[in-house]
Image (cartoon, rainbow, N blue to C red; front, top):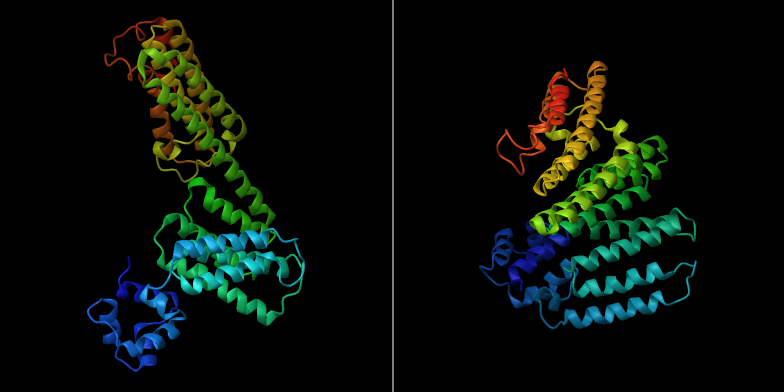
Length: 392
């Protein structure tokens, strides 16, 4: 439960009013407002109504009293359902606009409900989009500007005040959309760059902006980045699945081996589609290359071979070591070509080459700690190690 001072500060920030300006409007000192917000003092009762008016809320909202938010949310949901059930209209007051107005009324009582503040801004954006971009109906310029400013302010207030990461990213996406609808693409890109890389949030946002400004060359590149990342996530998820099965020990090793093979299929498909596009340029060391499909495949081979050894399936382990060796030779040829073309530097090349030469070691070290073991004594293993050691 927020104290009066905390509520006052949040509402003042929502209204984008400084302590000084609020104090001047009320005829008090800025120090008085500061003390109210620190809960050191409570304003005089005669100040409550003017204070609420300046902040654009009711006195009950300012005091956090006389409301039942849970009950009012249920009533709002019913009203939104009723509006959504109406036939779609192309006229001025379509469903998006009506829903925006319903939520706006709710926010007069609960301006700090950030979930509905963002929902309200989103519905208003959809209304403006249909009118301005899709030409479904006409919105006069002065009304468009007024509504645009209202929706933008809602989303920006959440962006500036909320610390919930999901809502914060949602607010950024809405702000980005508001900029795009006015053709302010540089501002939209600046907001999009604040989005996290994970789950392709940033690249999806930049793709949307590129499409909006008809930059189809950038859109194609961004779409490719999204596809690469989606395949990365799929392959890594399959690896995680296999790993979680493998940790159960001998009782589920056979099942784990099948899961590693499934992960391998996913990683090979990832390499087939996108291995040649992988952007080595700018990488500083091997850790930056970890998502390269061939590096990912090598990690799968290590765990698969380890599970074969755990079951005593030496022949299967050796077959996989030979496959891994061929993979390492292919990766070496690829990075050698990149080095010769100047796409990567000597440091990156040396890091990746050193890793390739350690492939044989990783085939058994998760199961066997001694380098003199049932796998390393095999001539086939020694031949594979010699081939990789010879790479320069």
